[in-house]
Length: 549
Image 1 (cartoon, rainbow, N blue to C red):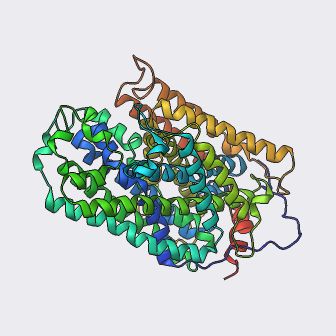
Image 2 (cartoon, rainbow, N blue to C red):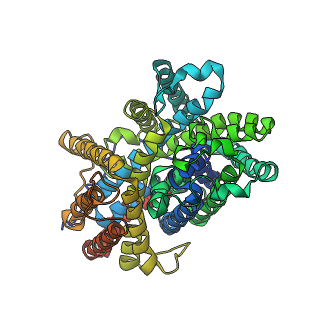
Image 3 (cartoon, one colour):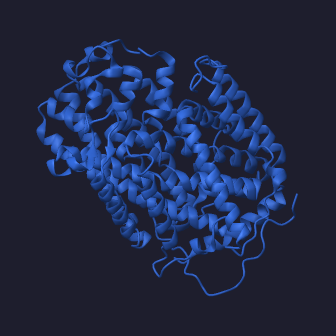
């Protein structure tokens, strides 16, 4: 294994650094504002169509999975509060090849959330006559029209422009916005529970769980449940700009997830209970409610609560736009971190006089606009982003296992109880979510991964960054078998394209669990040494902790 991971960063003109200006409220609302976005507007509708009333169970499963992953991130974020943390923890644990890979997964996830929030705004906007030309709803899946594409690009440009404010102003604005974003779903839960709660709906149509375990599990990944609960990592992404990161990051990560789980389960219950019988039909998979372009607002209208519908239609602009803003912010911080590690061109470290990494913002805008072309609807983007997210999250349990093994005495403001068991369990759960996303989504993710490797190779071949990372291939030997193995299992599983899958339901989960545990302990056996990890952390974490206050 190489004895040095990077060359020293050459001296040159001073680049303004990131500023540590974000407090606890700014951090928890950055995460909560990302969790409460377009997911609350559409998640209950999609889950009900996929699993029937048993979608409530799907939300519980999704909530437990995300909470476990959040607990892992809480320990890591408190230990090493650096900008774009989710992209960098695997780098410290395994070196260049793994760090570059998981860094790309992280950026891919962050950069593709803003366009899905834009699509949510346009979909709900079909309520207004002046917006109906933006979306073609004549087919089975609504798609953007030419005018809708132009509006989408304009909204992405607006989100990018707002991000050129200082991070403190952005965090303060997002905090104020998030009070509204949390308040509207809570108001919706209360009002619908009072004015229209029909318990008979829980066994209507073709029953409580008409599609069995497969329907429940599929709904977790593909209908928007996991997507809705994503976002807790935004506190980690902004760790390099936190005023008191060791105290605030663990609290922000865990607190945001707990609030989000409560809100989403309650929303699913009231959406189901408030539906009139005429919008349910004979089967949940073909219910009339699936035609709603503004699900909760239309349910409120049918329940004769027009004033609530008006608030929800307004929130359909506010909530997605707030989430999109934060993810544009997060993606620019991830690309900043990737550049600091030598994987992206050094341009991505350029910050303006407000401490904003402006090149990363422009890159996020361009990538977001490209998403409108192959994925022109909200639902079609959900599966891809979910898979990219959980693949990114899979690096955290591996990193936690390494740090517990190699750095047992490191300062840990938050210590995850039972990490010896929970870290590999979290890795298994992340891979379950990839399995449940299905082949139709995962092959597209595989293509996106290949594009990332092309960018990485180009950065090194064209010397676009003075940092020349050593890729520590020995510590990354488990990565190709992991990615290829997961792809093969999904293809051969009940969630793949085969009429007669090799691994039927439940057996496919057993195979994924076995592969996950093999990969986990293989990775633990070849991780970097204590000395190399400490050196790499010292090269990056200490300078960033001395950022301008």
